[in-house]
Length: 88
Image 1 (cartoon, rainbow, N blue to C red):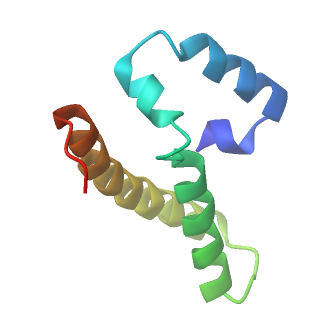
Image 2 (image 1 turned 45 degrees about the vertical axis):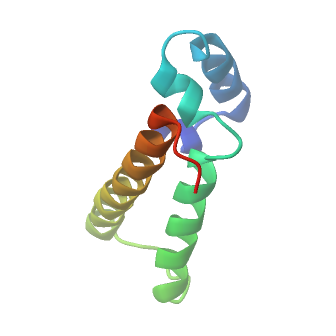
């Protein structure tokens, strides 16, 4: 999440540098999986539910924890299917 909120040029350079580092990094940047879009849409849904009101620091932290948990669960399923060669 820190990477999504940071400088976009720096984020792209870090992602490009990590592509060969591990299969997880490769999967995280796969356009068919699009981890960043999952996080962005989750964050937008939380903000919309709040009426686009700026969250307090505690709400922001709680939102981040919920987004991380939901994203991790979704990606774990996708990664497992990808790694086993399962095609839905």
